[in-house]
Length: 111
Length: 114
Image (cartoon, rainbow over all chains, first blue to last red; front, side, top):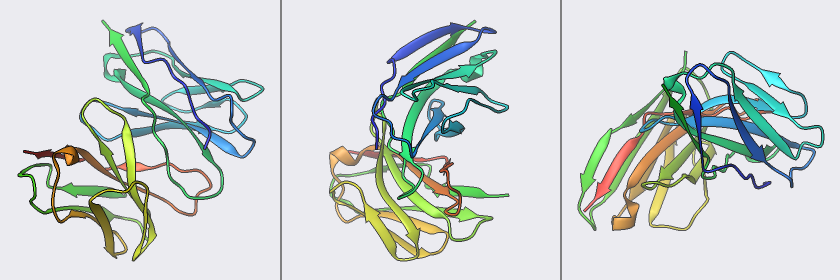
């Protein structure tokens, strides 16, 4: 599976958009980009996934660059409850359905 | 709707004692099941996953084992716990027929080995 690189930590003001970057320069054509987050002492929560096109759901937007070597997760109006560790994961479309979690980005939303 | 249960929620065990953690899923059939561990201050590590009853794949060599005696039951065991087994253990499930992998995680078991 392709490796991902994320900043260790980020801060964002409450009410502002939080933009979390992820580099996946070795991604191949049959690999999805997934984002999960983990609030302290809880299990991870699925946020969004994408293959080539930008995606949006009720939680966030995912912007994937045209060469697919990087992506950005956008939380449009961050709240204090969005404070969590955010994981960017790359996984093939086919094959074993396992996710490999890296260290993620610790996002802190400040009041 | 689907729910996933784990128990116990917390556990304190002495070194060398056995371990049994249980995970059950409700509201779905033939799910893929996973066991993860998160050591203090570290990321999640996949330990085992299962695509069916009696089918277990191990991701890392260790003194832990997993079993799936029923379709929606996944058990993590150890005969003799080590200090390094301390951590937050998470069970997860996913729908095997989907081409993407949205995993749903349980509440976790926090294990402390003394």
